[in-house]
Length: 109
Image 1 (cartoon, rainbow, N blue to C red):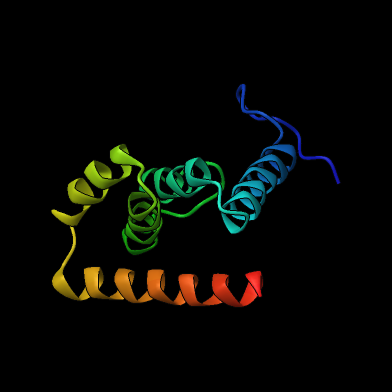
Image 2: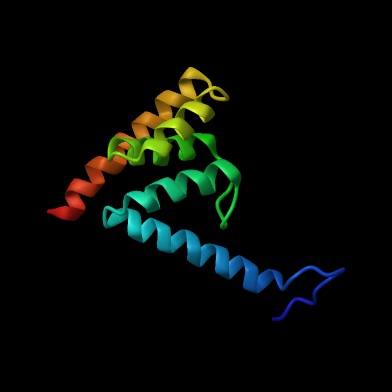
C-alpha cells in the first residue's frame, strides 16, 4: 500500500523502511566491533533519529560502549546526557552495556 503525501510530507512507508534499515545496519556494524557505529547508535537514541525512539538509557549504553573503545566524543556525549538522567537510569544503562559486552563475547566464540 502506498501512502499519499500530505502537505509536502514524504512517503511515510519509504521513510520508515529507510530508517529501520539504517538502524539495523548500525546495529550490525556495532556487532562487528565498529566503534563509529556504537557512537552513531548513541546519537540515534539520544536524538530520536534514524528510526530510533528517544531513549537516554539506550543512548548512554551505546555512548558508554563507544567511549570504552576509545571514541573520545562518545565520552563527552555520555557525560552530557547523564546530566538529564537519574542514578537508576544510569545504572540500567551500565547494566545493558555489560550485558551487550557479555553477548558480544558469546558471538565472538
